[in-house]
View 1: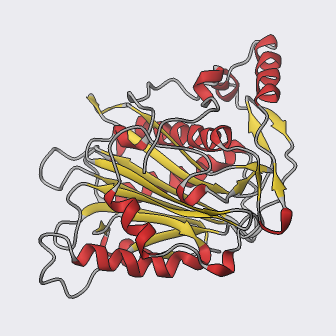
View 2: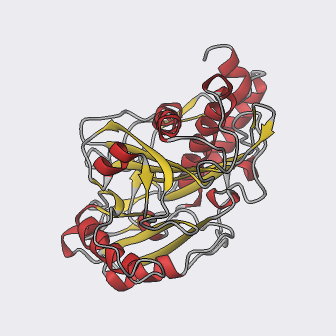
Length: 353
């Protein structure tokens, strides 16, 4: 279900480099060892543009949970399983993303899939984690097109290779910052406390505001996405407990402001962060050492949003509505203007811009 074949460039292909920290080899969430991503795209033209995206930590199940944290920037949305995740600080299922009115069907299908996994023969309770964005501007959301077969295909097809971006999976019908958006991902490899770790972010972008790239605003022709959300999944191999992972998740939501997010009344902004390093297997990181990791998360989420926009293509959907893709030529023009002024992303931020 994954594919790296995207006809449009990513941010780095255009020379847009966010922050100083190096990326992983794929510049994707799957750079974190033990993390896989799968998509199922559900599209029946002209009215249905939807799907499901699965983030699958290897070996995660009830009785073999990984430490996790969650942060809610604005709670106008559905994140199934969030209260237990916050209470216990554990993730015991894959994280699935989908369309608002399909979220509950997806959660039910996830429960069925987990119960069938080896080691779950005696499980009597589990906490599925499913997030959503409202894709109703471009898709017939009331038809609830995402079914069990789509969920299972995304889970079973998840891989640790390149991650398809843009109009795929849960991002097939989403809109952000006035342009067609979708799934985006990025990674960083910060040095934290003298050790090198990987952190990756994946976003389902569907939020309002005015896009800002290289400090320059770009107005889009799409809707304000007042009924949208942004779901963010952050993974790392850094040895962190639930409290510290909640701090990581908080920075992921903060990063949306860099891209021009309005954090409007109708936009649910959520982040789930987890580590693949099990408790007791590595010396834990101290809070005082976490700043490079926080910066890496901010940069990775910002770049993931840009990639979600750049990979997406102009889409005509439900009721004949059309949302344009982000025009690459306008980005290149903005980059040339910024370079002519002697500014880069990193330089402008150091000056407090």
